Amino acid sequence: MTKTAIYPGSFDPPTRGHLDLIERASTLFDHLIVGVGVNTTKTPFISNEDRVAALTELVEPFPNVTVETFEGLLVTFARSRDCRILVRGLRAVTDFDYEFRVALANRQLAPEIETAFLLAREEYSFLASSVVREVAMLGGDLSHFVPPVVEKLILAQLSP
Ligand code: PNS
Image (cartoon, rainbow, N blue to C red):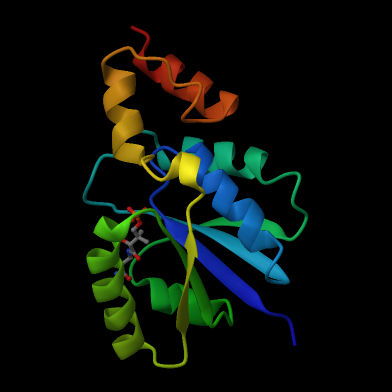
């Protein structure tokens, strides 16, 4: 039986931390779907199309990884892909409370689906898309935070 996992997130923008998690999760499952959550009520920092395009390029080295968008409940998307494993990254204890509540809500909605947590690598334990957005807006160096393809996207977006 093929073991498919979904790594869901907003990826707004995708960071080096996300990429590290994708690489490590790709070795644990037969098929990893990077699920880009689309929230139609919010304007993202990076458009849905650009996030998907950047992630698709970033996962090219991993043949068992694909990128898809989803709207609505994550567990509905997971069921539609015959997937019973959700992967989330934990950076620090401060992530735990939120992740715990979401994982329990998802379990209530879909008891057959498990959430598996992978610890972020130490050097990325501070890194969040919100940090990247703030550094970008203030003109800081993004090269340690995001891969070049994402840096290019952000700079293009910010240039007048
Ligand atoms: O990277 P993020 O912003 O923490 O990702 C959050 C995401 C997209 C994974 C989460 O908001 C999500 O699963 N949204 C879909 C709605 C849903 O299923 N919520 C879970 C019940 S609380």
